[in-house]
Image (tube, rainbow, N blue to C red; front, side, top):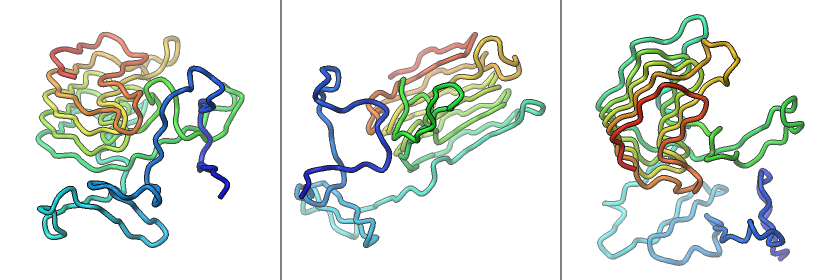
Length: 231
């Protein structure tokens, strides 16, 4: 064989051993030739079959549950700059099992490049989330169990104001737990993100796929209270 791995999308960063900063360990998943150990699984996309080696004799087809995510998002609350979504309250839900695909196309007028890359930079700050809000005001997400997530758990975009994210358990996440941020200073103030409360959340086992993911990432936002979260 050629001993080459060809990826669907190029990497935003070099993975060449010629650069000291890239001299890291890399992991290649879902390779049939390496499928041999207990508690490993392999997905044959061509055949549409999932293979799994049990961790012990107590695991049988009758007591194993497997979930195949098909959606990127479970909740998508989206208003507009003229008519924000208001007074929507999400409480006491189990929110789980979303896709982990993350790709990014830079704006050519800003970056001079419109190539689609396999991921983005700065804590996967352009990745999508399982629960998203855009132009939302006076909404809340409370006492939910969010787990088995492909990219981010929760994300607040432009125009999100007076949002409460409180007392949630967020775990087993591909990238980050909570991401919040809106328009930059000097843009239309209706696009600003701020006056939000992120309180008493339990966030753990993040960065399972994108290791640069943060527990809580705030960019371009103001006057927030982030308090009593365990990360």
